[in-house]
Length: 220
Length: 318
Image 1 (tube, rainbow over the protein chains, first blue to last red):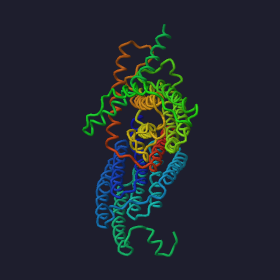
Image 2 (tube, rainbow over the protein chains, first blue to last red):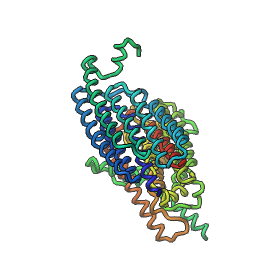
Image 3 (cartoon, helix red, strand yellow):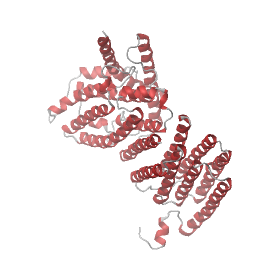
Image 4 (tube, rainbow over the protein chains, first blue to last red):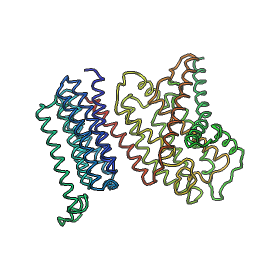
């Protein structure tokens, strides 16, 4: 395997981690959506490169699915939802920006330590993809934990799923049936979440998750 | 004979940075003025300002100590030495072995330390506020800078600028996402260190927003000339640093002929012009941020540096 092949895979996967950090940092909702679309674009490129390197045509299908669903359909739909909810001007209070970033760095370091140890015998391309995929997943979880707005939690969830796709492509791809079912389950989850968002909004007049805690009688 | 020519080239380098620094400042100001459709002063205006300041008398506050009078020369000397060590048109100069990135940071850090002391020396409130803000920015910018140095040192296997430039100019570096992150982080640190727009406005005299200007408010005459020249040198230093590390093409090695040096000098001037133009473009396009958002800005630089180092570890450990 030439160095350039590995370097490009490294560049794309590293770029995905970087975009995850941008997601963590961005407080404005529309900008967040644009970055999420970028996240999916980088994922598409990464998957397409893996397809080319591994000579696995079915991964191109994965790339096309990522592009159409995650880079185009979901951002556009979320855009509409935000407009219909009338929260497009809201700027979210990201809980302790610097602290979140540090926690994110810690998670990235953790996933690298864990993955590089565990997968010592695997192909370098797969190892590196797995390490980055785990950090993208953990960063997505961190985003779901730190955000209070339901829409940004949804974006955190979707970015987490992007990490899973990256992991699956690195490990010599997954069967096409699984790929399709994952893609459609994500879409269905998205529809359910969309309906749920409107229900929360109807009930509490806000999509701030803090309102739910108060309703349950918990103290913040 | 070889030693004499080496010394000569090193001397030329020291003279070049000193002579070009005000020109770069003037060029950036001119481009900024033209971008907002103003005529702007000539690019030679900083030279005229410096001459005027040197001719003028020094007005000292009654409470000023000896430190206040010494600091401008200290700051100027440290910055000049630092700027003369960065490879501008040639690598492998006779003092090249001292051009260590960590030494460079230490020189700039000590210059800043003395300037902050001088800001507090007279005892006016402006100087104090400037010094405290400068210290805040420095305490955030320097860790970021050190992480960038770690990244470069990991790639090149050395902290010496000549070696780094030589390694990065060679084709076996390959495609490194870490270097891209380090570049962005270095640009952010450079903007903060030089008191450029998103962090500090170099043209303002509005007391609530200024950092660098507040610190040197009490200086006049030749002292102010030294400080202004040091600020210009620092800008030149950072542009040369970015150019020599990330755009190392066109640098000549030791022992090449006059034609090679001429070409390298032209390449260096072109790099400076491009860097100055991009800086002016960026400053015109962006608004200054609140002082309390600076930690976020520099925190992003720190994070990029850290991420670059981490990613590099991954690609090296495979």
